[in-house]
Image (tube, rainbow, N blue to C red):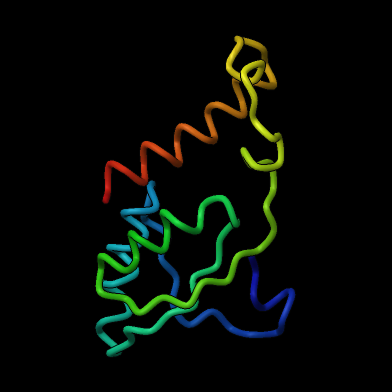
Length: 108
């Protein structure tokens, strides 16, 4: 999000190297610890928050969660057996859910 465009606020810190949430937490710590910042407001989708919060906490941050919308989430689809049958829509739902579940348990 462009803070200047939407809120007329200049961006003070920018982490743009990460390819994963874990890398984002690590690189953000490297940037923010230089200014002794340990409390953060973490903004992400509702379905991604649990894992993101865990990863940022592991880097020593005190995290205040700020979920923004749910997007296309596993909860949105109310998963049932039919979602696990190979279909384009079900495959998309499975990919989102599996990515979050595996990522969470891998990093826990």
